[in-house]
Length: 555
Image 1 (cartoon, rainbow, N blue to C red):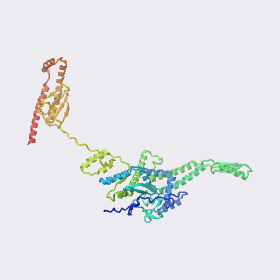
Image 2 (image 1 turned 135 degrees about the horizontal axis):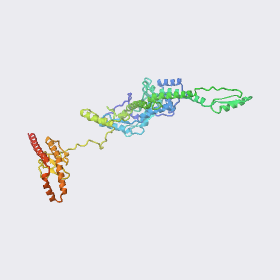
Image 3 (image 1 turned 135 degrees about the vertical axis):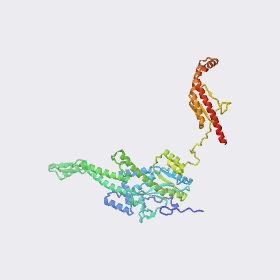
């Protein structure tokens, strides 16, 4: 009996199947992995911020992660742009491509596609993209094997404060267990995302490092702005006491003016005078705080979204806005590709290996906005290149066009069967020779039908001589005959016109006969006779041509 091959994770650790179905990184209120967080942002100053970041660089990143949470909670602008970047990717449709056209590879891809239909997928991707801000994120995979088959049941975001990095390289993640020890991540049990804003160690690659400095400086600006507004935004109260007022009277007066509003208050004797020197740059000073805060927000927009036009009221016209939007789309595409690679590495491949064992090819998740395919252009290219030897996988064509693989037994579209065409049988009058038919004239609608002397050829002319039906490729004799019949059309039409006049004037068939006999000598038939002579000659030539052709075939 063949043994199940030993599976290894990306770091070479053996997979323990019995450990995959239980939760191992859940937080506990009284344990080492506490959900309660500190607030290192309170009273933050440059020296303290530098100390927090320096500790994170050395592997102790708890306060750094707590500060990153604080910045997101207290800076509306940073929260807005970082959420925009994460949601723009998490809402893109996720598709699965089969590893090949092999039926089993297609079956595996269909299994992944069914799982992608889950409603929680958008939220799961949003939480995995927490790595954009912090540089890293951890998601625990809860597997379901209750029916004898492996399938991801749930993806749960885990607090990055509950993980550390190996001191040897500061790049290999470790889990803090219930005893406070650093242990390797359980194989096939975590999605470890590292989306870097810059090259370097994972803990130094997140946007939160930049945002923390920006938030601290903006907090200083907002504090000074608030003091400035309170000082210059309301009037100064002055209370005056009369001559001979006691100290108690002075204290009472000061409490009165001080309790009206704010701290801008004073008391002086009635005989004293105070000059107030008004600042001439109150308006300019107030605008300076706003400009500084706006400028800091613009720097965050550039860092997170790569541009400012979609978040800040920056003038520049439609063209500039379109260019900035393209920059944001480039960042979105990069994030989507990074997330696809992470999921394929930490989720899809482990899932397929647990269910089907190691394989040469694995299905791929693709996170990308649908491209508007030029179906007409691609179809034209395939029609020209495939006959020349170009080999194209059917699954790739289906994926490009957005068509799913047909289910077994489903009704499918196909090319219609080629219709077999038979040459029309010649129309012969009863008792006539199919080769030598006679000229036939009808009163209504005035058609001339004549056999060409060639089997399978029929030509019909209306009263004006226009051709109404023609089948089989014309031979040279047929062309001459068609021209002859076309030239006979006007002559025949004139004769029929004269006959119709006599028929309408006659009161009986006997009278019509007499009129026809009397008028026959005067009817101009010279042209028709010439045409009939040419027709007889053409028929003779056509017959001789048929005899020559038959002799050639027999020989």
